[in-house]
Length: 269
Image 1 (cartoon, rainbow, N blue to C red):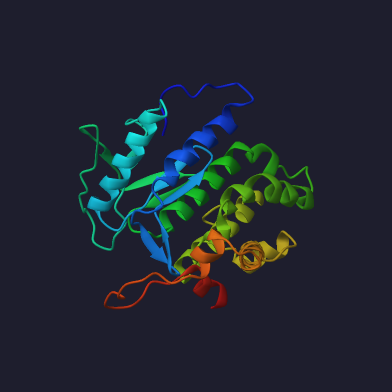
Image 2 (cartoon, rainbow, N blue to C red):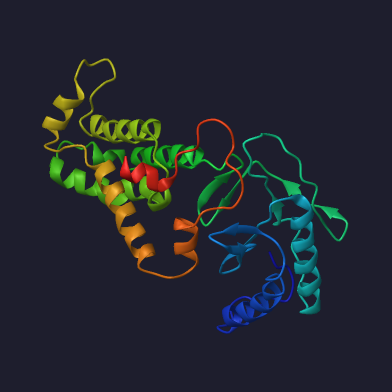
């Protein structure tokens, strides 16, 4: 987000940057954002990755203007090339013209934040599909090991759990898992097992036969559920922003029609 005078390599750089950014963003506290559980939230921060949040483009423009002004006062500048805008809504293709010093910021329909793909629909289908695809790509890179019949199936399964499945499961603690997504995850798990056994796609071998031959059961979804339960338990024991966002209710009217499934709904279904 910042473009100038943040020196790299010095051990003091992270602390100095945190001091500057904290001072800049504290000036946003009194401005509107989104209200969750009675608390107003207009920014999320992790290291130097910052997200400004507002209910409409006028409020967002105001937040951007203040951040840009305060940054200049501290001798910093917003990097327009790395600052992007996205509208999250059920209605597609909504435009939000946001400017920094007269320069229009690029609007995206998705972006990556902390390694996770966030889309304008607010759903995580794209992220999960990308995780599955990335896991399959890495499986192919390790194919000489994972499909080697000279290595015991137990050793190959451990390699799968160590090197491939963590790629697929990255960030799964916050996934909203619908029945469709569950089917895709289970299909990906069987995809791994079938290729470990070198089962051709023309072979009429059932999933049960493959599981029996690999001496295993479907466990990927169970491990994802355990991770989610552990994560939610950790959040519930804390009293902070994470707890508020996970358990709090957003103000406003519900939209017509069927309501979207939430993360906690998927855990209890």
